[in-house]
Image 1 (cartoon, rainbow, N blue to C red):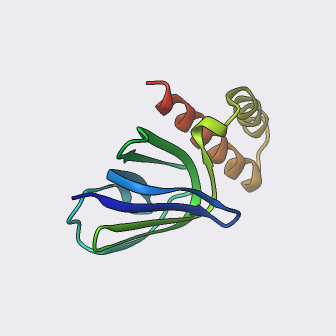
Image 2: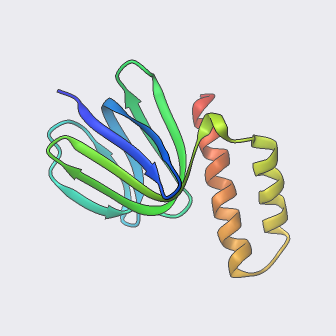
Image 3: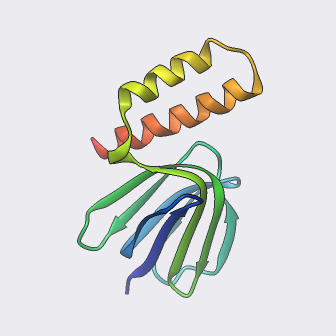
Length: 128
Protein backbone atom coordinates (compact mmCIF):
# COMPACT_ATOMS: atom_id res chain seq x y z
CA UNK A 1 0.00 0.00 0.00
CA UNK A 2 1.11 3.56 -0.56
CA UNK A 3 0.49 6.94 0.97
CA UNK A 4 -1.29 9.79 -0.74
CA UNK A 5 0.86 12.82 0.09
CA UNK A 6 0.34 16.55 -0.44
CA UNK A 7 2.96 19.16 0.42
CA UNK A 8 1.38 22.61 0.33
CA UNK A 9 2.57 26.03 1.47
CA UNK A 10 0.48 29.12 2.01
CA UNK A 11 1.62 30.24 -1.47
CA UNK A 12 1.29 27.08 -3.60
CA UNK A 13 1.13 23.31 -3.89
CA UNK A 14 4.72 22.08 -4.01
CA UNK A 15 4.12 18.37 -4.60
CA UNK A 16 1.45 15.70 -4.42
CA UNK A 17 1.39 12.05 -5.32
CA UNK A 18 1.90 8.50 -4.11
CA UNK A 19 4.72 7.78 -1.69
CA UNK A 20 6.13 4.95 0.37
CA UNK A 21 7.23 7.10 3.31
CA UNK A 22 7.38 10.61 4.75
CA UNK A 23 9.84 11.93 7.33
CA UNK A 24 9.20 15.31 8.93
CA UNK A 25 10.36 17.27 11.96
CA UNK A 26 7.57 18.24 14.33
CA UNK A 27 7.57 20.26 17.53
CA UNK A 28 7.79 16.89 19.37
CA UNK A 29 10.69 15.55 17.26
CA UNK A 30 11.19 13.73 13.98
CA UNK A 31 8.38 11.47 12.78
CA UNK A 32 8.35 8.80 10.10
CA UNK A 33 5.12 7.88 8.35
CA UNK A 34 4.49 4.58 6.54
CA UNK A 35 1.29 3.06 5.20
CA UNK A 36 -1.06 2.06 8.02
CA UNK A 37 0.18 4.79 10.42
CA UNK A 38 -2.17 5.83 13.19
CA UNK A 39 -3.95 9.18 12.70
CA UNK A 40 -1.75 12.12 13.74
CA UNK A 41 -2.07 15.88 13.85
CA UNK A 42 1.24 17.61 14.63
CA UNK A 43 2.86 21.02 14.43
CA UNK A 44 5.73 21.20 11.93
CA UNK A 45 8.89 22.63 13.47
CA UNK A 46 10.34 25.86 12.12
CA UNK A 47 13.47 25.19 10.12
CA UNK A 48 12.70 21.54 9.46
CA UNK A 49 13.31 19.33 6.46
CA UNK A 50 10.66 17.03 4.96
CA UNK A 51 11.70 13.96 2.98
CA UNK A 52 9.16 12.12 0.86
CA UNK A 53 10.05 8.81 -0.81
CA UNK A 54 7.74 9.00 -3.78
CA UNK A 55 6.65 6.19 -6.04
CA UNK A 56 8.20 7.01 -9.40
CA UNK A 57 9.63 10.49 -8.75
CA UNK A 58 12.42 9.56 -6.33
CA UNK A 59 13.04 11.50 -3.14
CA UNK A 60 11.32 14.85 -2.69
CA UNK A 61 13.12 17.06 -0.15
CA UNK A 62 11.89 20.42 1.10
CA UNK A 63 12.81 23.02 3.71
CA UNK A 64 9.70 23.68 5.80
CA UNK A 65 9.06 26.53 8.19
CA UNK A 66 6.07 26.01 10.47
CA UNK A 67 2.65 24.61 9.73
CA UNK A 68 0.90 21.30 10.34
CA UNK A 69 1.16 17.61 9.50
CA UNK A 70 -1.99 15.51 9.26
CA UNK A 71 -2.12 11.74 8.80
CA UNK A 72 -5.40 9.85 8.36
CA UNK A 73 -6.15 6.63 6.44
CA UNK A 74 -2.88 6.65 4.44
CA UNK A 75 -3.37 10.30 3.49
CA UNK A 76 -0.60 12.67 4.58
CA UNK A 77 -1.06 16.42 4.30
CA UNK A 78 1.84 18.75 5.06
CA UNK A 79 0.50 22.31 5.25
CA UNK A 80 3.49 24.62 5.73
CA UNK A 81 3.56 28.32 6.42
CA UNK A 82 6.59 28.52 4.10
CA UNK A 83 8.20 25.66 2.15
CA UNK A 84 10.79 25.37 -0.60
CA UNK A 85 11.72 22.33 -2.64
CA UNK A 86 15.42 21.55 -2.35
CA UNK A 87 15.99 21.72 -6.11
CA UNK A 88 14.66 25.30 -6.10
CA UNK A 89 17.04 26.50 -3.36
CA UNK A 90 20.17 28.46 -4.27
CA UNK A 91 22.74 27.11 -1.79
CA UNK A 92 25.06 30.12 -2.15
CA UNK A 93 22.23 32.54 -1.34
CA UNK A 94 21.14 30.38 1.61
CA UNK A 95 24.71 30.34 2.95
CA UNK A 96 24.96 34.15 2.56
CA UNK A 97 21.65 34.55 4.43
CA UNK A 98 22.93 32.29 7.21
CA UNK A 99 26.17 34.27 7.49
CA UNK A 100 24.23 37.57 7.68
CA UNK A 101 21.83 36.20 10.28
CA UNK A 102 24.65 34.89 12.47
CA UNK A 103 26.29 38.33 12.51
CA UNK A 104 23.20 39.89 14.12
CA UNK A 105 21.69 39.42 17.56
CA UNK A 106 17.91 39.54 17.47
CA UNK A 107 14.92 37.21 17.40
CA UNK A 108 14.45 37.95 13.71
CA UNK A 109 18.09 37.06 13.01
CA UNK A 110 17.74 33.79 14.94
CA UNK A 111 14.61 32.89 12.94
CA UNK A 112 16.39 33.79 9.69
CA UNK A 113 19.33 31.58 10.70
CA UNK A 114 16.97 28.64 11.34
CA UNK A 115 15.36 29.11 7.91
CA UNK A 116 18.74 29.32 6.17
CA UNK A 117 20.04 26.23 7.99
CA UNK A 118 16.95 24.26 6.93
CA UNK A 119 17.42 25.35 3.33
CA UNK A 120 21.05 24.17 3.41
CA UNK A 121 20.07 20.84 5.05
CA UNK A 122 17.43 20.30 2.35
CA UNK A 123 19.96 20.94 -0.42
CA UNK A 124 22.53 18.68 1.26
CA UNK A 125 19.92 15.92 1.60
CA UNK A 126 19.38 15.90 -2.15
CA UNK A 127 23.09 15.47 -2.88
CA UNK A 128 23.73 12.60 -0.44
